[in-house]
Image (cartoon, rainbow, N blue to C red; front, side, top):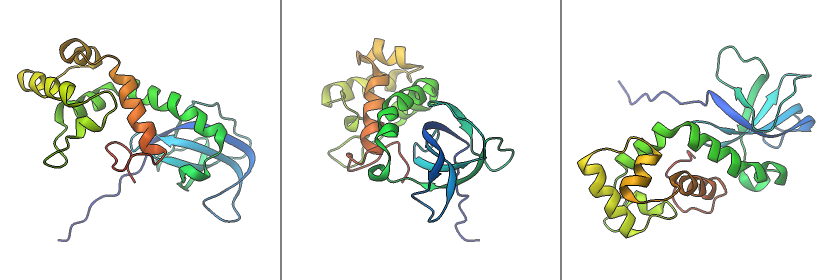
Length: 186
């Protein structure tokens, strides 16, 4: 058997912007309810076609999985940050912070399991606010006992506002400022 890896699709996305009569930038000639959203799991910018006469709220979590969509006709494709409307770009930090806050276990697990990327650079160092000093404290602390939540990271490692640092890193990755991605899937 070959290496058959199941392609992972987003199940949920957060609405960044929508136009009830919009034109797709990913699929030529496609018009309708065009939604710009951020995928919850892979943190990718998506262009979505909504069902006619559906209304959406900025920040709304919508189901975009394969079965049983109620407000979404189809996922048109991944959006390029450069082509993303300014109105959607301004919502990204708030939505990312919401995702980082509500998926605490996923991000704490990341900090508990992050590894060196090269002999000189550790994945933790790429998160703003974590330099060599904090990285060493985090590595030492997690060796004794894995972190349980953000509060645990703040208390034991002394890293203030881990949500803000993780959010900042993810926003850098979404906007293409980061050379390497830790969280956003290409």
